View 1 (cartoon, rainbow, N blue to C red):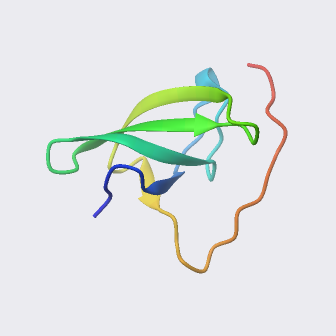
View 2 (spheres, helix red, strand yellow; view 1 turned 90 degrees about the vertical axis):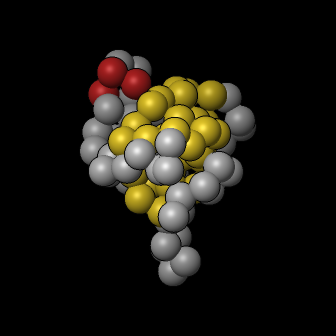
Length: 76
C-alpha cells in the first residue's frame, strides 16, 4: 500500500512535465483508498519540477534493493 510521504517510481514518460519513466517522486496526497496519488518530483537542490496527479497504475513503490541515480533535467 502506498501512503503519503512514500517514495514512488514513475512507470511512464510524462514529457509535458519533463518527467521520464523511472523518475522518483514523493506522494503528497492519497486519493480514496489508493486509487490515485498526488506526487511531487523535485531536483537535487529541492526545486519542484512538477506535482502530478497519477493513478495507481502509473506509479509503484520504490524497492528496498533499488538504488537511485540522477539525470540532467531537460527542457520540454
